[in-house]
Length: 159
Image 1 (cartoon, rainbow, N blue to C red):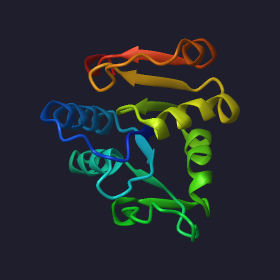
Image 2: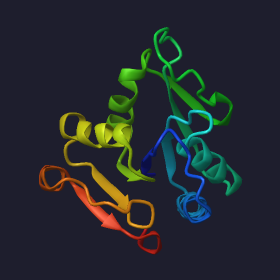
Image 3: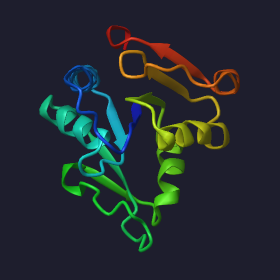
């Protein structure tokens, strides 16, 4: 069973179209019986996705937790939605663990944090496929990222 790493901006989009697209993706992944690996911070894109995935009877939510991090400003991980938690101690370890455990990654939008996480795939899981969803990512990634990483632009209906 595939494990899908879910990346998305910390701030959830308020756009109705974006929210509907995230719901569609969550339903597709749930129907494929694929597990997700995610850090569902409260009020984030990841949490919204995890909630929708669960509503659609998704297989399993593996949460990457950093509960021992005393300096972290992101204190609001929704642990209750997760079926399993992996404690990586600090927030800085979260993307590395998500990348290492995932079979592929889906980006639900771009932000500085998501770009950082995508770049880290070069060092922790170089050949992992990174799916950039066209409907949620209006911009292309820098050419150097496209050249050095396994990035694929795709539409929701091709997932």
